[in-house]
Structure formats: C-alpha cells, structure tokens
Image 1 (tube, rainbow, N blue to C red):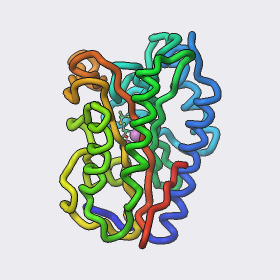
Image 2 (image 1 turned 30 degrees about the vertical axis):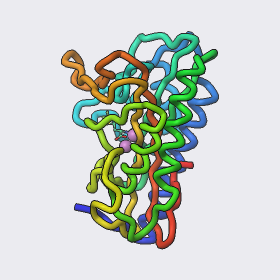
Image 3 (image 1 turned 180 degrees about the vertical axis):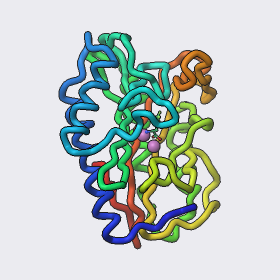
Image 4 (image 1 turned 180 degrees about the horizontal axis):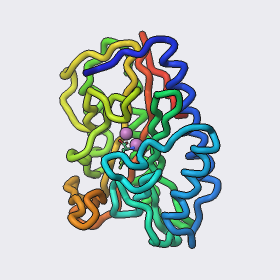
Length: 248
Ligand code: MF3
Ligand code: CO
Ligand code: CO
C-alpha cells in the first residue's frame, strides 16, 4: 500500500531524515583507514541514539547492527565486522533512523585515503545517477522514469545497474510500497503523488550488474565478478512541481 503523508507526518519525516543526514556527516568526519567496519557501526549507533532516535536496521528481520557498511565489492547490506578499512577502499554506509514513528533512510559511499581514479569515477557517477533521477521529478511523473534516468546515466559510463535490489517507499515502515527500481522504461509505472515519500538509491557496479547473496550470513550482497560497487541514497518527498530531498 502506498501511503500519502499529511503535513504533520511530513514534519516528523523531516526530523528523522535530518538525524540520518547528520549521522552520515558525523561518519564522514570520522571514518578513516585502520578503523573496522564495526567501529563505523558504533559511530552510527552512538549518534542516532544521542538524537533520541532508534536505528531501524538493528533487529530488522534479524539484522544484527545499526548500519550497513559495504566495502568495495560489497554492494549493500555489509554486516559490520572486524574488517579493517584500508587506503583505497570505497565504503557505502547506509543507515535508517526512526523517531516519533517515522523513518529516514540514506546512504553515502565514502572514500578512504587515496582512492584510484577508476573507483572515484564510479562513486561520482553513482551520485549523479540520483540527481539525474530527481531532475524532472514531481507529482504526476511516472514512477519508472526514475529508473530510466538512473540506468541511462550509469550505462552511458559502461557501468552495471543492480536489478536484484531496489528503492522503496518509506514512512512508518522502513520499506513501504512502491518499489523504486533503478532501471526501467520511460513513461511507465504509477504516477507519483504529492505527499509520497520514497527512497531513491542507485546501486551501480564497475562490471556486471549481477550480484550474489551471502549463504553464510544471509545478508551480504556482493558483485558476481568481484568488481567494486557504489551506493547513494536519499529519502525524497514528492511535491507538486518538484521534490524535496529530506536527507540532504
Ligand atoms: N537501509 C536499507 C535500504 O536502503 C535497508 C537495510 S535493511 C537491513 O533499504 F536490515 F539490512 F539493515
Ligand atoms: Co538505506
Ligand atoms: Co532504502
């Protein structure tokens, strides 16, 4: 079911989304080589709870941490561990926070130390994919125009667009309808309505778009060819004539 948020609910969404944004800024200031991904998770837990919010991922379908920390070939849902970040890594940190019953969700891919030009380009294009997707977005626009924009931009650089995972609606639940794929045919899908809040989250790979789901931990998603992937996500409010990015 697609939910339309009232003005009051949107105010609450703004608050949780602001906390998510601030948490990511805090991570960006502190993340560095030598740190374990578990230490990144601790930063996230500390910041979110200090804002009187709750990390929505913790315990979600048994997920054991506050953040998803995904290094290089890990696309998303990397479980924080003793893996040490090293110079040249790219690290997606994806977090969801709930306050007053509403969720905000965003992800950034951080650069650790000296990152190769090739990987920096991947991270940059992944961010651009998000901004291409919102360029002409607003009430009345067909849903799959989002995926069309992401896919067109990513593939023009020779990158892969992950199909197995998608963006989503968000609100009282972390994952609500509709699904928001990063691929699609222009002019198709439901028409977006003012008051919808959705997460647009391009997951872009340097090689194949095919991914594997870990059989060991049930979560970690890696590229099938082991090449790096990047991830960028914001929670977006659909309005008449445009959008508001709630996590920026
Ligand atoms: N934040 C992720 C998303 O963008 C969801 C992570 S679910 C978790 O949809 F359980 F893995 F944390
Ligand atoms: Co997320
Ligand atoms: Co999301």
